[in-house]
Length: 85
Image (cartoon, rainbow, N blue to C red; front, side, top):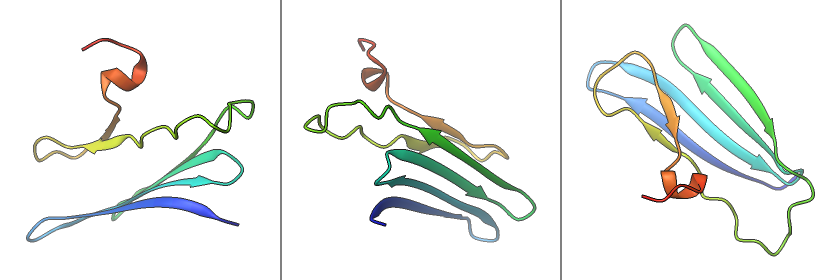
């Protein structure tokens, strides 16, 4: 099966925070996998199967952690949500 994946390994000088993987497979399902030292979160998102195939691929969300913290959030720019900036 052909798939596209984005991997992000989060490290600081003294601490390995974990690994985030965002994968889009040929079956149009997006899978988010977050692994930290003591926690493993996994979630699959089904994408609309009737979307036109000639449409530009949706940009990947970006991982946002603006300052040292214990939690992470996935952010999509407002322009990708149909909002005007």
